[in-house]
Image (tube, rainbow, N blue to C red):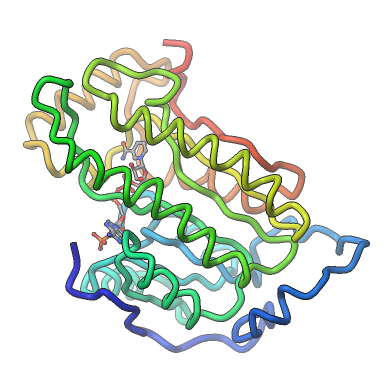
Length: 282
Ligand SMILES: NC(=O)c1ccc[n+]([C@@H]2O[C@H](COP(=O)([O-])OP(=O)(O)OC[C@H]3O[C@@H](n4cnc5c(N)ncnc54)[C@H](OP(=O)(O)O)[C@@H]3O)[C@@H](O)[C@H]2O)c1
């Protein structure tokens, strides 16, 4: 996994303007919230957003999109060099942290040192490999579940006290749950679990005025597929493109728009937003 089992503060040029939540003690945020909700912000400008898995692919594009709207972003992943490289592409005031999100102690340490924030995005996932039951590596399947499902649940557990009322969590699912193929048992199961978790936490966190949603992408061109050879990747992408109404596989910036929408949209909770190029019709 990683040589950084605990958090490592990489960049500290935090703006002191915008939402004053950074540094607010958790006990203050856990105090009873006012009955009359504040007017919804409808914008990410001034918000503080933590992107777990933000050093690459979809998460990095969410961080870029949010920062372009005036949000202050914190990107987190397990590899310090990748986090530093991501922070360098983001506007001044962006932050990076290193944490192995499959370890609860690292997740707890991360949130204990972050201060308060408005939105949490979870896109962490290691390189994926697909396998039919014959030859399925169960230990590896457990690791895939460990980061994508248990990591997301653990992050929600430890982030909860630090989320401002009016904020949200956006998890990651995928179309594999609703439209599985042979050999996709593990990703399909993870996606199904993520959608149930999203609905359950939408109720559990509603009293704190925190919404919980998920995005379900179809196949996206990102480093996630690096476990396959370039030829295998292109064959996968070509096969998908041929059957999709949009005629091509998405780039991560297109999927990121779904996360940005769910953070901005104050009237949606417990939903999984499918962003699949029409795969559901194919
Ligand atoms: N790409 C697709 O076709 C597709 C389709 C449907 C769903 N999804 C899902 O979307 C999510 C994002 O995928 P992506 O395509 O954006 O992949 P990606 O480009 O590989 O990004 C994955 C991110 O997770 C981080 N990560 C990996 N292991 C970690 C760990 N132990 N602790 C903390 N961070 C870790 C990676 O950074 P480090 O390596 O530096 O830790 C990276 O920032 C995944 O859950 C994936 O399953 C992807």
